[in-house]
Length: 236
Image (cartoon, rainbow, N blue to C red; front, side):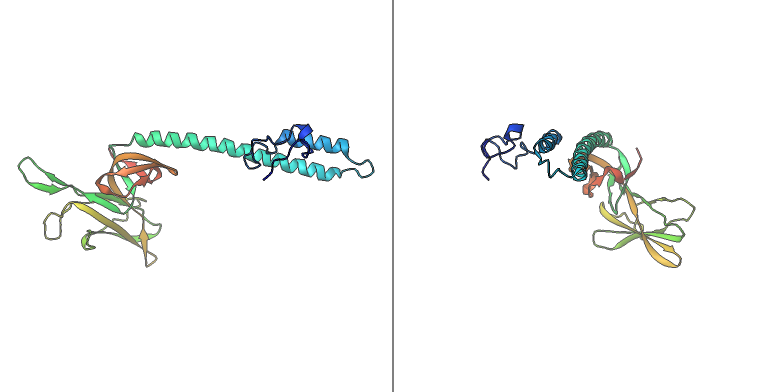
């Protein structure tokens, strides 16, 4: 695009000429409120007395430009708020590193601990579930990496909207389940129909990462990362 010179640019005398070393897309020569007012007053000074400019159109143009300017200023303000909010969230998330929490998700990790006498035992799994309104029963099932059911239990209906549950890591035959990842699923009965319910797992927050959408909580055991809003309770 050819940059207009003072000789060809009718707005050069108003200080609106685009500098020779910039392009029209750079934003340097963009029209702001001051430039718009200069154009408006110049239009009034040079209008044909026999064909005056329609005042209503001029007022409408001015109002529209003012609105656009206001939206631009609002966007700048909101961007500032967003940046401050993200910084506060990162600081808050950093304070959770090393803590155990109940986090939204369906993947749990069970460890194997070894006692002083050399015997090993599973750490067990802690979880929670959202109880749907009107539920008459709730069942939580845990499966291993092969998709085999290793535990299934009923959750009491006692008015708690998010009851917790545990699995001690023991198989049906009394043996210890191996350490590793397990998948949770929950189904409630509401009005005689089965309904899936949201599950939560106990996990240790290992570290914090920063993404475009905010802080990311990296969980121990190789579990999927979580958002700060996924944390519903700090255990310790």
